[in-house]
Image 1 (cartoon, rainbow, N blue to C red):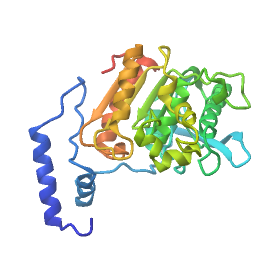
Image 2: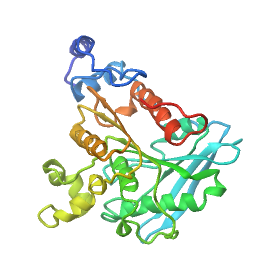
Image 3: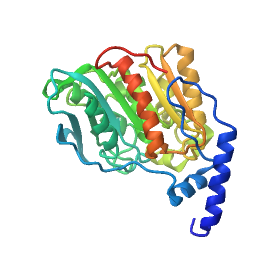
Image 4: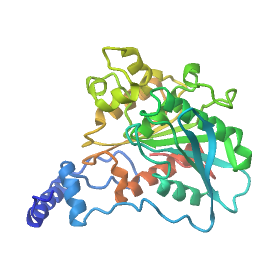
Length: 334
């Protein structure tokens, strides 16, 4: 980036703007259109460097009217104490649907406060929101992280009365590795070997909705099984144990009774190919599962860090939650 002159950056962005204005993506929804994207990731970086692409505030202040319950211990393991945070309006009455956000980071990093913007924005609307930590691959290999996030769901259900949670209205939301873990919760709730030894083992980990931001769905593809991140997560190569790649793939568990799913994925994602979400949408459709797919032309991995993409995604998330985990009257979903 340092070798590209400001003049060249300006010309590239101008060409990008002309390209997208001449060939807008097809409209699939009646709500706001997807924001104009970019030719490639270099163009995204150029836009950010030139100040034409605004990023969200990663560490917003918690408003005075929002209650924050931080670092609640939900599980103790040999390598890590696992904690979660909960947010809701201070004047909340009764119980409300719960939205659980799971951070990404290649199963090796990230922080439970990475999705603070979402946590606060949806808490302001009246939802209870939560976020959690889980064991990374360097601490424990698959299925450790999957077991952890399922234990968190069980803990939240067990303690629902203490935090105004409706245990029958829960959605899981995640991006990248967090999207993968959210789908594993949503699609494998009836798989005993992935429930582990949670303290609240008799409680179901079943949820009522899934939101997947650019998460890997099938680790058995040639790209997936050869990627260093996948092999590190599983602790095995394809040649050593192909079954573990299948058992770690959310699409391995798809059935007709899976929860409604909302998908967001950018077409220039160089880390998780958009074909992963294309195939997921096709599989869910074939099973008759309610599925809504936003395939954003010209946007990369972690695209919702951009303000305009984040606002777009939140609009359709609100509609999705209002249909399947309503706070009030039911509205349609596009």
